Every structure is written in C-alpha cells, then in structure tokens.
Length: 148
Image (cartoon, rainbow, N blue to C red):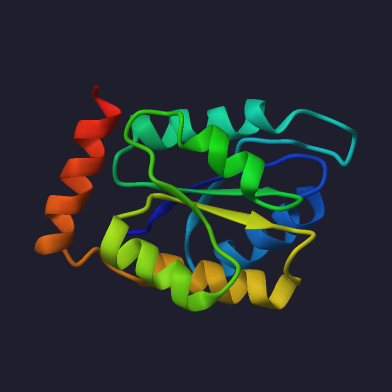
C-alpha cells in the first residue's frame, strides 16, 4: 500500500516543497499539497495546521512541513493532538524519531539544509519503522502529558 504524505510550507520553504513533491512522487508516495502555492509572504501556522489536521484525520499518513528553519512549523505542529513532529537536519535523527518517538510529521529548514540532504532526511524518516516495546511506553507517556 502506498503511503499518503501531506506536505506544506511557508514562503521560505516553497521552492524546496515543490522539489520534495517530485522526489516523493518518484518514490511512489501519494502526495497531497496543503500549500502554500507561491513564494509570496504567508504565515506558516496556517499550513502547519492544514497538514496536521490531515494527518490527524488519516492516522496512517505522514506530514512534511518546510519553513526557513523548521522550528516554527514544528512548534505549531506539536500543538495538535496526536501529532509528534520533529525538526531534523540529519538522517540519524530522522530515522530515530520514527523508531523511538513514532513521529508522524517531519519538519525541515529550507535555509538550514540543502536539497539533497533534505531528500536523504525524508527518505530516512519515511523508511524507518516505529520499534514499539519500551518506546511505546514512552510515547504513551507523551500522550498522557498531551491529554492533561
């Protein structure tokens, strides 16, 4: 079954988002673009919310958010119940946040990393599987914090 990926960016991440969509499609992913749709100035929380709401509605999907640093997108994404978003600038962190944290949203800083590394990070994130076990206990603890 093809994984569904919801992708969004602000104006700083727009160009990388467009290239990322091509990269993901070439790997067989079903990509849904949640905006933005140009490099005109815009507000990242709008697009982070669209992606996260889509991931919430489709629990088997993943989200990718791209802004200048990835930080603003991740802060906004993590405000959404059930979203575990991580900013990653290296492949090891991208893999481990899936394996240990069951992250479902990857945040990337277009002004921090280059296009090729962004693709490698994304591939590492999407190629990794949650390990469960003791990590499932920790994810459940995160969920408890979120539900307080």
